[in-house]
Length: 160
Image 1 (cartoon, rainbow, N blue to C red):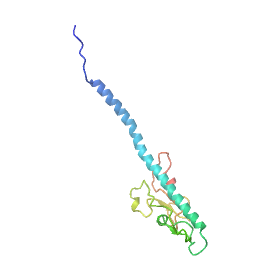
Image 2 (cartoon, rainbow, N blue to C red):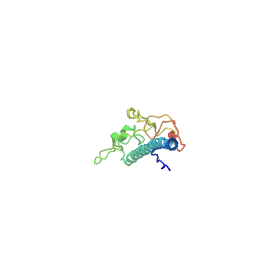
Image 3 (cartoon, rainbow, N blue to C red):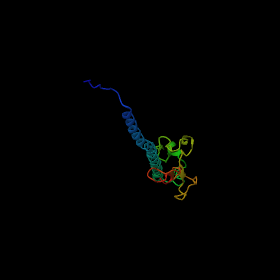
Image 4 (tube, rainbow, N blue to C red):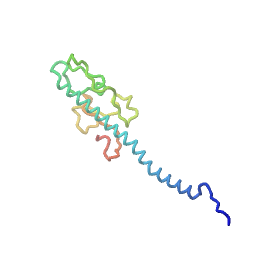
């Protein structure tokens, strides 16, 4: 009787099955990876909107606490977004100039927003209608994302 030979290595069938399984797994993971990148930009967009809106609200609260005088003019909202970074004197000599943002808060969905005076956002003034798409230019009451796209949750970026 001849002893059975043991073959080392992988058969062609085993190799094809392994490659097929790895391909199926890779195809199922790709949409998740793509959605993760989109989701992270959406999270950053929501966070940035919240940061700017809180800064605008804090500016208005500081304006409302200000004593009546020559410095208290206008609606109480910043004239532009840059005023949140540069700050404003609210008439308290102890405090001086009050800043509400450390730096520009950019729109993550707009890569060119660093060069824009509105930082990639669309603005609404106090006198504009809530659904207005044109900025009146008097002050900055609200900001929103100008992108036409739809988020992963089905809502429109403009409605955030």
